[in-house]
Image (cartoon, rainbow, N blue to C red; front, side):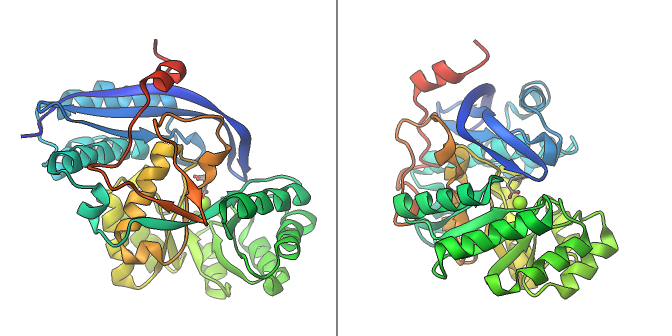
Length: 368
Ligand code: MUC
Ligand code: MG
């Protein structure tokens, strides 16, 4: 039952209207991979993998190749219900987190469709929606304020993750100050340095911004600065969130138990649903907060994040980072995602609720 017969890895490219820039890189075009898992029963599961070489070393070509040449031949014949076997097979290959995760989420899509149930119900069924947080990429302070105002006024978003990690003084700190001054006290602000500062710069910057009521500090300095990061975390007045330093359950354990971080960003793009569950349960067991993060996902990836985030109480405690698809010029879904009153709802349909528009796919796919 539900035996895999074929896995497609289709490269597509959709430009951003406004590129996202941050300390470790920049994304101008969503050059992603659409993954489709076909089964003997005729059900097809869908997900997307976003290549993020600056975080995971994967490229669009490497994701397509590992799925089509290595994973697919070994997964054909295995049932989608044997998720543990599917992962055992994929884990014979090291790394490749977004490739593996897209396969995992497409497999969950198949399972949901086969049972006629939304995947969010299968995962946990806590609620059907998430509050939304928007990531503000690098720009001039006044432009970042204007973008935040537009997100608040058009979509009701009142939580913003501010990208920092350039020069802390006379740049990043000024941006945060301008945002607080421009947006007032009714918005939540937190920061993400993508490893751009040193540990000591980070602590000085946090001290300089102590009046701005920032709620979280994500990945300010490299996790490989082992003692520096621990030193910073011990002194930080707010939770230090591990993102790219904690991309597997093992790394999450290391980050938390070594005292390098005190909260975890869960990204379905890199841990799918199966490993995101494990990360979440670890965090609950250890008593640390989680955030549903953004891998600069398109609408398909964003839907996957919302499906997982809505499923559990702990992942809905904070707004999830679900809005950066708004900066893309187009997407693949038949019915685009909508954010209103600062909320994104999942769809009450079997599977993930991802219906790819064949005309849009034909327009943006790069392999034909
Ligand atoms: C984020 O939270 O850091 C940028 C780099 C990456 O790995 O994810 C994005 C957003
Ligand atoms: Mg981050």
